[in-house]
Length: 302
View 1 (cartoon, one colour):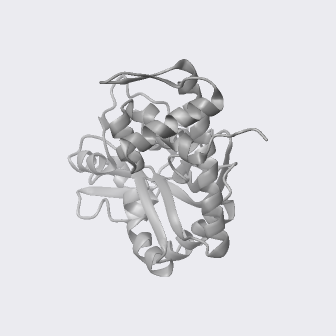
View 2: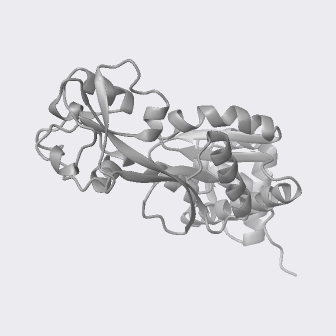
């Protein structure tokens, strides 16, 4: 029977590749430096090849060591999934769950969900990470996150998607603006207006433009903002119009501001909110249960 690397040795290798220092890697693994060093040497003996060049001050990974650390990370992620699968099979939504969420959803949906979810599942250790969609997808693929809460559609390879509900866009304009007196607004009415958008990187920018069939004119005369909170302040000051998702409006983002919210025509202006996870994940049923719980707590019936 062939001798195979142990998971512990692969953990040591992964930490060494990240920190490039034996002492720091040992600290990350919660072991002594000599234990980690011995584990790396045992790994090299099993494989018959060096994974790192050693000196008193630094560690240089060999090309093979770097390639092996990437493969080791995948093995460790799968091993963690086995443990999570066992926990989920015994009691769903228990143990660690790392949830990634985008800034245009998290602050408006999660506050009303997290406390109730914690009460219903006290053994669930939920860790949140907020970032742009591209960054979250990278972390999902790397095994750093378990499931994402995103705005769709979005091209995602190797992932499962569960649509939770639809989120309609609404026009926000300053009070007294010509469009503020209408019961609803057609998309064609926005063609000559100054449209305020979020800066590049926010998927809400793309979704708003695509959902409403608008051309991105930001490079010419439109203004940009870093957050929806900034957008509504700019509209309130009369600097232009913007498109807000109903989710943010329901959370009170426009409350008390000098602006009018006007529905768009029914034929346009929708994004979909859903959960996304790796197809290779063993926790698909658990994530579907999470989505169901989120909908029930949030009172969404869509």
